[in-house]
Length: 223
Ligand code: SAH
Image (tube, rainbow, N blue to C red; front, side, top):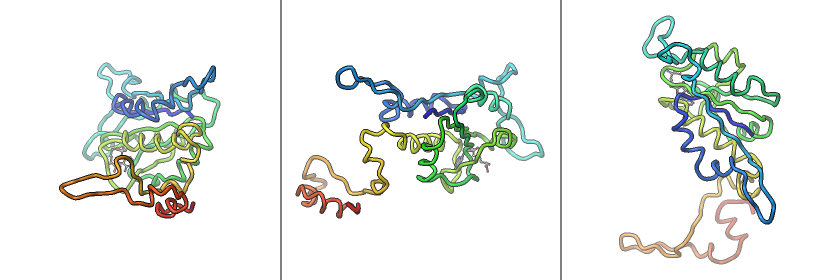
């Protein structure tokens, strides 16, 4: 799975995608013996500012029809998209981050991971993106929730993260992907007893019992 992020702030996003599980999934890993595990995902960045042609590298401009704020210009984004996936043969999905889009869900994450080879995530800033981008690229608008952020970077990272988790091999064990685990809430780790402000907080006995059926029931899993 190849992710392509079009954003004015690639360095902000890269700090996140290079860490932990996502960072590891972008590297080849040496397994036991001569075994080498291939890369599971690639994460590529494109800054619309690098695709501007004026000397000030302006990626935004005033809105036609008036109104406050600025709008991200279409052409630098279209050029960035061309660079990212313009010549790719595999299946490409393009998503524009927007508080007015369809609300992102686990179901969408599964579909994206299963059906596409390239996912392009376009992050807006200011008042949003010139509407022609959506039409030209046949993109879908996606929201991460009923609230407005200052930019599409956190939404793009949220989607990337949820989709990458669904790519086989990104998580350590296949079982972590099971649907029922999405809501397996109650977890404990060492130590067995924590003293906090004079009160003792023990790990419930059932978790120490070794009775996996009882533990699954307690966690709300179906077993
Ligand atoms: N006035 C604009 C808001 C722009 S917010 C409007 O009504 O659409 C700036 C950018 O942040 C948007 O272009 C979008 O890319 C991103 N953004 C903000 N909230 C978001 C959300 N809930 N989901 C996805 N993207 C969001």
